Amino acid sequence: MTHAKSFGEVNFGHAQLGDKRRTKRLVSLVDQMCLRPGGTLPQKFRNPADVRAFYRLMGKTM
Image (cartoon, rainbow, N blue to C red; front, side, top):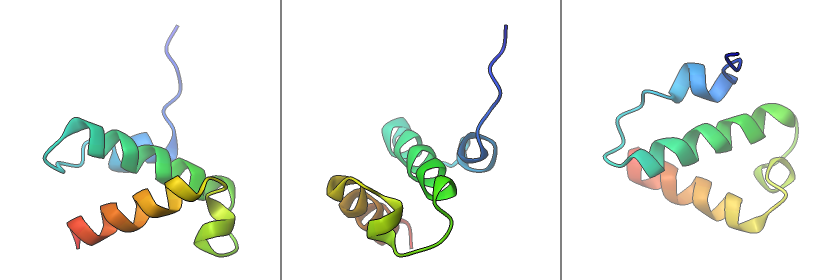
């Protein structure tokens, strides 16, 4: 039985960010954002560590 890929996996699962863990984190963050499409980043990410991780990840990839 195969599992359906999430939006994050389909669209960002092959991102080359220099480390598999960063790609995995990006996929997780995107999937969390999809669960709450409206609002601010702190509203999208209920865990403050996820907000910080998002900012760090975006700072390194932009």
